[in-house]
Amino acid sequence: MIKKLLFSFLGISIGLLISLSANANSLSEWSNDNLCGWMESTSIPKFILDEVSKREILCYGGIEVSTLPEFDTFEGENGTTFPSPDPSLIPEAVPDKNSADTNSADTNSTYSY
View 1 (spheres, one colour):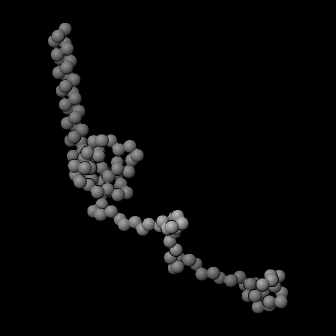
View 2 (cartoon, one colour):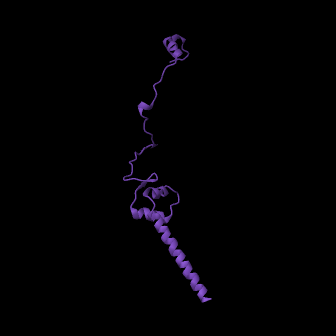
């Protein structure tokens, strides 16, 4: 009975040791971008966090970066504001063919100014 317990304990210990070393070896083969991909997850395993910390990796957007991008803040005194669009992206308004005729004749206008 005691031999069975001893062999069981020895088998479990060896299995645990092998699985832990296999886990450590598999992370050593991972690229930094592979690890950074996990950093985008909502639930990051502790061993991934430990490996990223050990390698001193800086991650952004799921990939390794050398510096973090700078962000412009759009918060004003009245809340969030938005930057003006690039004027080159705004298409130029083209008047309708009929609008030139109606604008020249102010007497035919139905609008009062």
